[in-house]
Amino acid sequence: MTILRDARMRIHRWACTAPWLLAAASLASVEAAAQQNASAILHACDGGAEIGKATFREQPSDEGIKLVEVEVRVEGSTMTEGPHAVHIHETAACDPCGAAQGHFDPGPNSNTNPDGNHPFHSGDLLNLVVDASGSGAMTTTTSRVTISPGPLSILDEDGSALIIHVGADTYCPDGVVAGCAGGARAACGIIEVD
Image (tube, rainbow, N blue to C red; front, side, top):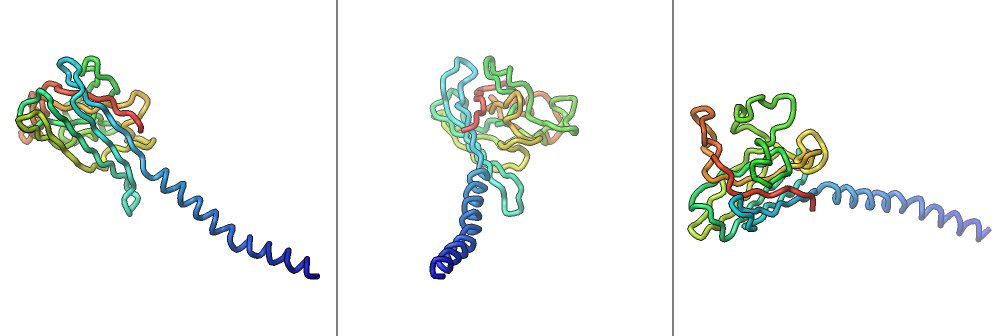
């Protein structure tokens, strides 16, 4: 009788603790899957010297919206002092920098004119301000793109690149005119999952 009672108590203890163990393991795997990271090493378009790095960290908000924090840092670049446009471009190619194609803007509402939707492309970000030494940093958060798979993923079949432009993005208050989105390309980095 004692053996049977001991066996029942062990089964009861296991039945009571197993759900908690499974829940803890599930929560740990969900938390690990919740944060996605990617980065891009930035190279100057006029010679390929490494000048900085961009990092991307995706995490869901409390409401479940995927938010991506983008941090861009450059050091010792030959870029002029002042603001420079920063955009995620639609193709993971930097040789030459023009190979990155237009601003990342997937989906059925993208404009057939690549500049027509500016500054509302999914890949449109804030300006990076560079100092006299050619260094600068910019951090922003966007819900327009994701790192994880889905229709807004910057890691889609052909990937994406981060481009820093020669000039500032004025966000085209008078409509899209030449150069209002930053003009020529100064630096490029292919975005890759970490």
